[in-house]
Image (tube, rainbow over all chains, first blue to last red; front, side):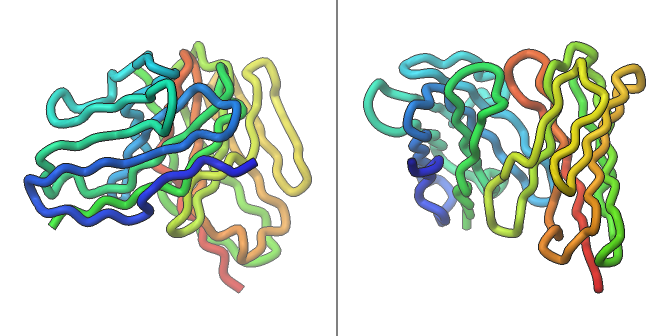
Length: 114
Length: 109
């Protein structure tokens, strides 16, 4: 049973480009969480999704950021028109349900905006 | 609002015990977690404690919870160089874990 898979591990984008981050949850997990870790800071919650539904997006910036978790395929975090301040590590976690005592994290995608 | 506070750094000598402390504000927290993050890696769940417990022990790890003071601690016995990492405290009151900024544990010989 593979763990939570995130790709790419490293992503470099120029200002104004789009970044697409993928997260494949563990087998049997239908809940996905995205977190952002800025340099020297803790993890900040962004969005919580279940299959085909956004449950809580209270941590998502209002503009340029979107997330989806389709019926088939990985969860996608999409950042449009990236700016330097978007440079961070983005972590995905998945769990089979609530509470998240069985949540597992991926290794993260490190986005660098140049 | 929810807030989780941790000291940023802890330095210990190999073989000593490490104690990492955390305070939280959400009195409705049902689960409290400790995660470990090694350089360049994701977060690994070390242990968690349910809010009706005072203590949980798992090999070298001991978690203490003082619910009245909203204080959580992680004690690592016989700390090794491989324990050097960032340790995150997290609380889950609603359904989304809220993380502290992490404590960097440095173990020196």
